[in-house]
Amino acid sequence: MGIFNKFSFIFLVIFLSLSANAEVQRHRFIIQATKVKRLCKTHNTITVNGMFPGPTLEIKNGDTLEVQVVNKARYNVTIHWHGVRQMRTGWADGPEFVTQCPIRPGGSYTYRFTVQGQEGTLWWHAHSSWLRATVYGALIIRPREGKSYPFPKPKRETPILLGEWWDANPIDVVREATRTGAAPNVSDAYTINAQPGDLYKCSSKGTTVVPIDSGETNLLRVINAALNQPLFLKVANHKLTVVGADASYTKPFTTSVLMLGPGQTTDVLIRGDQPPSRYYMAARAYQSAQNAPFDNTTTTAILEYKSASCAAKKCNAPTPIMPSLPAYNDTNTVTAFSQSFRSLEKAEVPTDIDESLFFTIGLGLNNCPPNFRKRRCQGPNGTRFTASMNNISFVLPRNFSLLQAHQQGIPGVFTADFPANPPLKFDYTGNVSRSLFQPVPGTKLYKLKYGSRVQIVLQDTSIVTPENHPIHLHGYDFYIIAQGFGNFDPKKDTSKFNLVDPPMRNTVGVPVNGWAVIRFVADNPGVWIMHCHLDVHINWGLAMAFLVENGVGELQTIQLPPPDLPIC
Image (tube, rainbow, N blue to C red; front, side, top):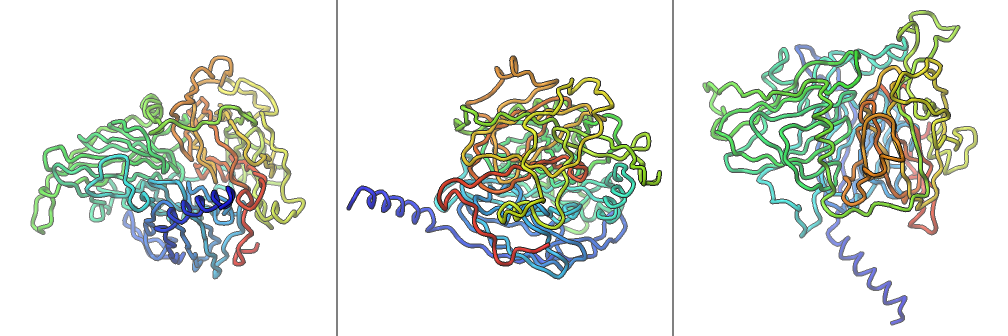
């Protein structure tokens, strides 16, 4: 056997052994209006298969998913598989007008992709207008056959999906804000597994109950599916041990409080080590934008010990014990929590950087266009809210998706001149001149060569107001090598870089009035949007997209579009 054939044979054996236990899992998602009653009122709510939240998908590392999405609702829809790497399968990523045109009412599309090298908790959600408010569910990735968790096997596992509920049609809420140029109405409740809990009107009957028994160690898979709000989460009298985040394992650390930005997931172990009773699990807002209105309510679920459960109808169950939650503006607790994350093992952080990028992120105000009536400019001082990265407010195309335009060479849809640095240097977190409040609209992409090693400094600005922004990059995981406050200073802040065991994430909370530095290798060809996961901000243009070129050969080239890809 020649040396080439020998290596080919070895590769084939490894490939077959890895794929032997891999499965193809097929699902059907029917997007439809379903009557859902919350806060005493019934709404025609957009759901998947009539379920709210939608179905939990459970797969193994290495499995392939085929999900046929049938749109029986009256709105366009797409589904994004949040955090799935989508290696060469960008057509299945899901953001509307980025990797696909929307699935029109009456249409369908099958998402096909393989999940490789990821384990833990991810999730899926609509990526079209504000349908994500109710169209979401958990995506659980277990180890391959014969492999185990890097922590003791939990007795049971429970997905905990934090959400936001409007006592209105969320699509109407965002349409009204788009019409007036003002900030959209804040939500009326937060939810745990789609239930607001005991502290809201007409809600206690449906309160989510999370079971536990004395001596058990259970795994909670926490997902922040809220539309616009980072959230604190605590369980009364119980410590939580963090073991994973965004489908990557972490060095375990113990905490009494979690904080997740929208889009983030955190896997935690909880021990049944308290007197058998009922304990509230509670979540409320972390609100970093000063003077901005927010939903200042608290959602609850009940952690219930088996011996304290109320199976009998005539049972006077004890009132659950309430945890003390951090103040809504407790940035110190957020900082301490986010800086506790470390990769489980030594990380392969790219060190020789090919692309060193600096992106400012923040809000803005557009002057009222001369042809607009006053009622269409209800932002501060008769303006319209906007947002930008590097002073470019991202505009999605309407006739083609960006990936389609790139792959088919369609001119005039985008330009590849997104700036690598802010067009103007200024005191990003100080008093910013009003002349910088109005960004330039554009559909600009940044081109990356296949395999290039990328570092991005994400810098918050105090334009309008500083804020903690959860920034999500599609198609990639990245290492968060440093975070800090004030303006990033390469002379002194590079000494803070963790190149040994930084956490790997797909969504980073850029600190309020601060910065974060991320690194990744551009080894996945396609068009990948990077945006703020506060949906109000992506509507205003707080986004950009990378165009990662094909490399050499089939394995470094994006697959051809599937025949059922929706057309615009």
